[in-house]
Length: 293
Image (spheres, rainbow, N blue to C red):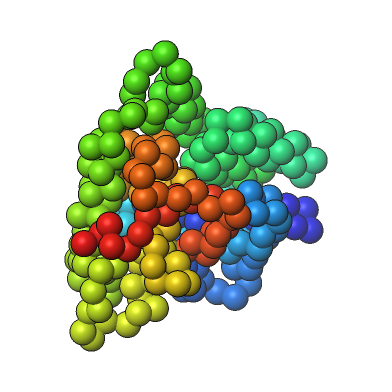
């Protein structure tokens, strides 16, 4: 909250909307729609990119899903173009058809605080973002109930996430080093875009690429929780990263807990301090660059 108005973490909103590069999306917003907020992280209080209500609605209307039926963005766009704007043209104003009263700012703050607490307990930014968005819609007098199936799905997924079991060997506590190498190679062989062109992670890390800006490579790797350390000797892999989980490891046994699997490699290391990867301060696991080859 800022001046009794809700602000949203840009990266979390973009993750819900399926926007991969939140920095570019935020850069295209008006100056009064973007800013920064302080959030608690493992490395302490950090300043992160944020957007206000106007910026939130602008992102929803601009995103690709705004024309894809069944998505949240499509429903919102249809509400604006088929209901709000025609009503303003005909009557000069818009009045919600919902019978519920708009919630007060204190109620919105309480809802937001509850959402943040729930998100911390579930350890998923998607739930936090969605509940915050729902609170924002409610404050505008818009019934957010059409979000409920998505919200329940996210909560159910978090509740059903595999938990460590000290009595059973699985992907996150396996002593099978081959499994650890398989996990690492899945990450290294994945293709990510740099300036619109697909490259294997392995190639981006192990060899200089002619005509490719190093800063563009660093940004692309950072989006997936990857970074070459300052000594250029080790690859850092974030313990938690939405793109790495949803895009690269989504259909594998390592979609969560990949750091514990990679730590089984004899040459791996777990830095004692937090590091900054892709603009986010986080814990990580590292492997020597020569492991990549």
